[in-house]
Image (tube, rainbow, N blue to C red):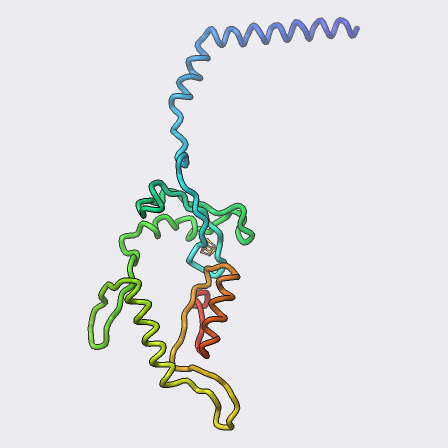
Length: 198
Ligand code: SF4
């Protein structure tokens, strides 16, 4: 009995082999070659991966930006972006806003340099990062020197600076947030917030 079944299976297998050979004779190999020819080249080949954080909300999802060009020379262009599967917050997922970040990166309206509206002016003008940071530091020092409150009316040390506020970014790592918090609070600034609540 077993011998008979084996013989039947053998004959079935032989039939399938003949059918495959016949498909090959009908041009299956050519179809396969045409299919391979039609494949697009892998679009992420030769790109540089850069890990970053989505800047939109306080969830702070991890993203990977793929760019082509020389990062060191500043000629690299972002050409693809996706969620970072190794990131503990989002595990590779992105909401629709995060998934559309490439449009945000390439937007014509994106600010690329600091701008300042000087006292009495009705327009913003572009300035360098050096000028912006020097100007911010100068304004902060002047205001703090004039308005810092070391003690309250009862003589108790309070070390408050209430005339300047600081808006930080929530889309950062815990470590960056910790350092920002320490730096800002060490100046005595009381009004301190980030865009997660805006
Ligand atoms: S991908 Fe969406 S949820 Fe994640 S940080 Fe960006 S805006 Fe927030």
